[in-house]
Image 1 (cartoon, rainbow, N blue to C red):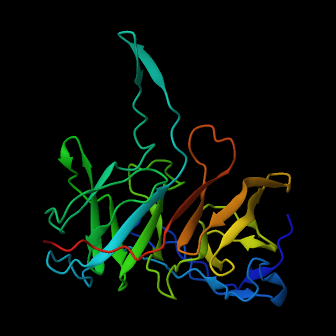
Image 2 (cartoon, rainbow, N blue to C red):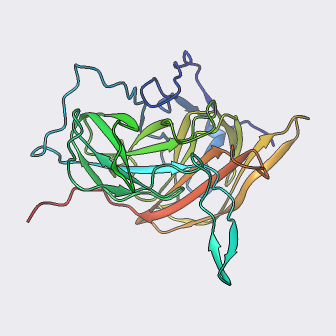
Image 3 (cartoon, rainbow, N blue to C red):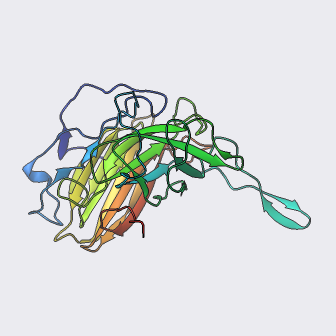
Length: 306
């Protein structure tokens, strides 16, 4: 696949860490667009780098603790990755699902807590490749603990640093060095509001959290999307009508192999998330997987207490 059309300016590579207590890959890199790279779907639309904030997720003493009365910021979580295979056994003449291996899925429920383990608010359900409901937080340290059959975990599963924005989306993925969700994860923070600097209506946001550089073709535009980067594209008057999108990765022989090939159809009041992740589960059929989620564009908000 040709990879001309837009280029990323080089920045120093961010540090890495085995979990969310370290520096995360940055999606806030500058993008320069050539005059010939404008999509035919909207030649007059402005092209923006996704408003992504690289979250350091290191929760030191200088960060504010969560306050029950001031938690008015909206956090949603999108855990991405390859799902474990479905297995069944016959018990008593009935098919029964076999529980997936430990660490093959993120915690099913996450609970905001104080530093000393006091629960704050309600736990939220986390399902792989689906956006969670809103968790009310305040800027600063956000300790998240898993909730299992035995109740709240004794220590935080991850420690998110929430910046001073109204709404944020934390994309989480399994640490490839560990291969399990058990001991935390890696992640990337993106603005989730519909403001001009966030993720407005009539846009498609493409995020690459895989370890591969991906060849991208969206409409007439072609380019290369590096790991840890994210871009936003606008449709014609916010509309995408059968706009083809293809993403490819190079195999060991240097040949481009498609990992996503479909059409984007979206009304002006919608927005679409496209997230590419490394397939690092059991016997992956291809190196990269994709999540495509369309939703009505609105800034996630915390429910006010009655």
